Length: 189
Image (cartoon, rainbow, N blue to C red; front, side, top):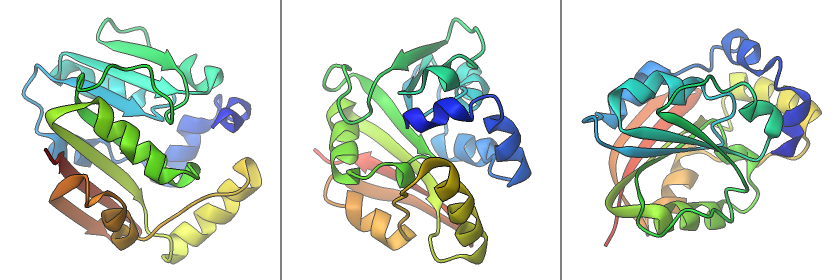
């Protein structure tokens, strides 16, 4: 995702232009209690982290783009982590919630990514994925645009994402909104 260093100044405008900002929906799915440690993998400019920070203990914004992380607003409850999501330095069983919002399709080794999420999550930890339905016409346009900017992408259908995580996570919520979906899973023991 270092390719995001060339677009970080315009990323939030891009999200608004394509109506990809789904922060309210993610917050509704999370049902935060106020004491959670949240890890936003591929959290970029930190918009979602900042939005959620008032409702949890702390939010880590993990991204491998220095440019994207440079846009994260100063907030004592939002901490930036510059590293690769496939090789995180977080301790095992240290996080309550892992969020992957609009980032799964940028990762080739999605199995390794979900293994890392599983590893860092506490026993009753939750994984929330928001991504885009690869066969929808709006997403085909988005894919073409993102391909120009970032190169190869790895979009999946919602069913493919469920199949990707179902051995490690019990699906507790599935929201399908035509061109995007939200999946919430709880870590299996």
